Image 1 (tube, each protein chain N blue to C red):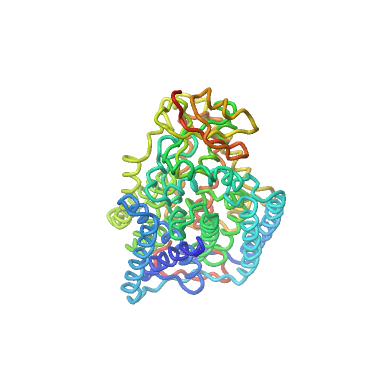
Image 2: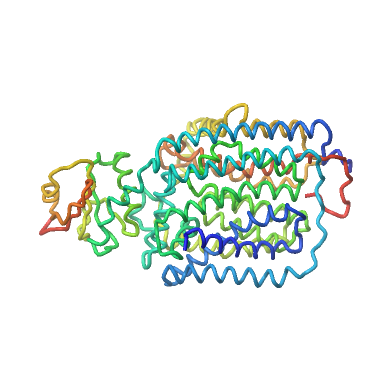
Length: 147
Length: 452
């Protein structure tokens, strides 16, 4: 077998290595600059750390119940509703949040609000008693006489 | 104890396994370490996390499950290494040397330093990773790290937001580290695991191709990978896609190496183990594992048995998980195959994501093209089977988009980028495998050795 079939020598080999090296170095410098800008904009850009803190009191108040109900004040079925639910679920795992108002087997319900409201009144409409207002829009309810 | 420490225990365990199973065909010089160290991470983290999950399923609490899993995997690897490392190693063909390889090494050092900087910056900007990292992988890891709650990781209530039907290897890796420290949610574990898999993937590309095609080829392939902007994005995002690519590349490298050594059984076993671990990482890994199994059965025939046997344990975990735990979720429907109008949308979207892999003139596909044009393809073209897993993976992704039950545009916008990224390391590796090796002098190949 001819060696030229498996190896390449001379200018072509040097050019290949040099061109790829130069382009890759340029790409890395550019990408690092891009990500440095993103990083400079803010620490914890998605605020997951503060979201975890918002729900910190729930496990203790619910006795670490494996499943708890959940509702929020975003438009039902919207991306905002799903995003709020996903971040609350991350904060509260291993407790499972249930977004289903027809589930009558759940004792505790978490309300997740964007702004101050009549939390007790909202719960009453759904047959839930206000247990605690944990601040920053997080409210814990308990199933009342009937829903 | 920092949450990163358990990852080091698993990594060390993986090194024993890799050193033991490559003992008969050890690479030479620095490429040995550039190969064994990155390959040790998926073997160690993957194997021990499978044990961890099995112990949780058997009823153990997270802490004893984590300690036992790591120590058993470490002890078994060390025992195997003790037995096999003393055996005489067969001579391994040294790839052609290239006097100007230092150019690529310098570039690799520069790119690597910038990547490390970006990973650190990313950990500060997104300490919990991007959406899928915290909403899927790390969230489910919290179930696996909390006593008595492990099965909640596949709770049907999570459908629609956290994919409880997805495999659990990556969540188990993170959960095991949390279980050691007793601090579920500690950001050090996922950030460290993500950094380890990102760095390992680059080093495996470098060291893997170095051992097969020489240092210049290995460095060039790693440089093309480092020119992929989405690789940087996913390294910051802490998704499971880079770990998946690591398992897939490791499995393919082991298979290629085994093929060049008369289907060396321990290397084939390592390939089968890594392929099955890819299947336990993400569903896409199952398609890859099936593709590699098919390729090896075609190429090796009866010699493929060690590969198949080594794939059984993790495959069994996946099968039991899918059959008994994962909630039913209909992701695809064959009825959509009748909708031929989806094909242009899928092709356009994949084409767009290929363009999004980089910025011209430093685009990785352009760089691959330059390498092909200047180095040329090895003649005669051998071992076409190595392209089968990549081809089947591409076909599988295409079919999955075509048949998706989700909104096609939504599915394409959220998944096309990541599937293109998952395939990039395999594409780069396969292309460089078929290219001629830069060499200082034309040297005659050893006629006693098979051409890899």
